[in-house]
Length: 256
Image (cartoon, rainbow, N blue to C red; front, side):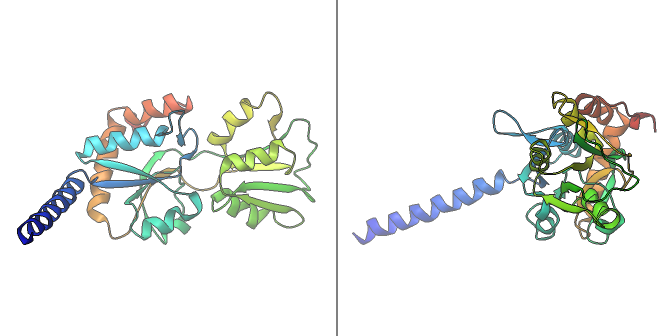
């Protein structure tokens, strides 16, 4: 009986050892945090998997760098805190490079150029942007667009923020807000796909820099490795090709 018990204990410990060894063997070298709710940057496809421009680019960078990567889905409003907490190593989530964010994290060079933010409204809405008062304006929370609204358009208007961009679009379509302010490259396909229910309204506003990878300030070795991979993919035309495929937009990173 004692011998059998010892054998069982040994077998259990051995199984545990191999389980840990297996997990370590397949652990990703780099974990990439993304929202999974911001098409065409990143989203969940019909098969339930993460897809989009940044997923394709992230995988290409990891292959170029010779590392294995795992994407981790995280809500937008906590995406920087969870990077700092060590829950992943890199952010690729349509995040604009800003001086405010640089106080907390480091950024790579941009992998998508700066583009203007746009307003969308219900088709036929009569809005006077020279004297915009009494208007409900929506934006996704913790974005450069939400910060701009708070700074420049809060007086006399009602500002609403949303956890995800699709929630803000739904509220605009339902008439619960009068205006939606968002990144133009996100908003253009939304308006074009609205069946004529939405239109662009007001000025284009340039805020923030291009989009880049966010990383912890103490991750210099990783930053150098990912920067080298990104530079190589810019030079060989991969970044331009992926932008064209996802956004139908011409860029010239390969020629810079």
